[in-house]
Length: 310
Image (cartoon, rainbow, N blue to C red; front, side):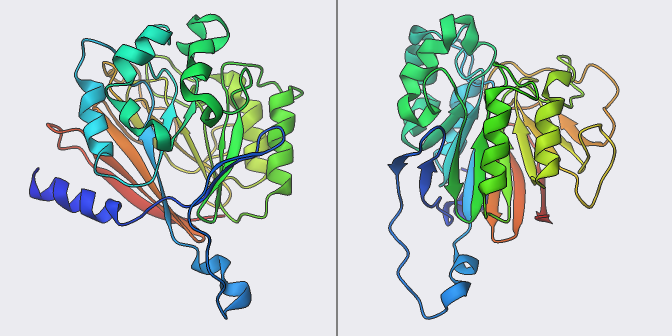
């Protein structure tokens, strides 16, 4: 391992994810970290919650390509909760593809993975192999959306492959989750992005989801689908720059499937877009976050920054 890679792994490896609680449709505890001991600081306890790491990508495992193993090796040296942002096993998310393509690579991190499905999962009827493979970690079977606490943050995984219209059960559930949350900071991920400079282009059907997220001051959106890394400046649901209340979107379809080139002029507010394998890591602190794109071996691209929550 190179000196620079060792530095990244050492730095990120110090931070461990905290308690995870599934709260979709009734709430089921999956696993939990050691309880926090009482302290004499009373109301300051929440401010002392350790930072947590959320790390991952979408568009991951395709048998016969080296990408999924290259990015899985990055995860081997990064502590925290792993997100898999859809199209996790190509080409159709079958039981055999999860077993032979995903399991030998990202599957070694399955116990700490909180996934979301992609359009390729739904090439199999009702994405049944996806739900079978991840079990309770994927949320209620057939729904595919759920929420959990990570450090002091609320994290929500949505399902972009089912109804996301304003009146849909999923969007109503999302509104309820956000309105009842006391977390200062929120991150949300799903597969298909609203905004994109990639060849798959923007997905306007996700705009109503963004309207709800914007209403409740969500901080970060993370997607896959286009096989590239793209970072947007904070913007509103209509793509207008908004440095005060805007949501910062990251597209990280870089988990191992063959990467795309950027096929069109960069979309408005796009700050970075590049085609390479790697993982996006988010250090979720009390009232702020840091992001870092960590490339697979052989790429020199790097992106990092930080921001306060709304």
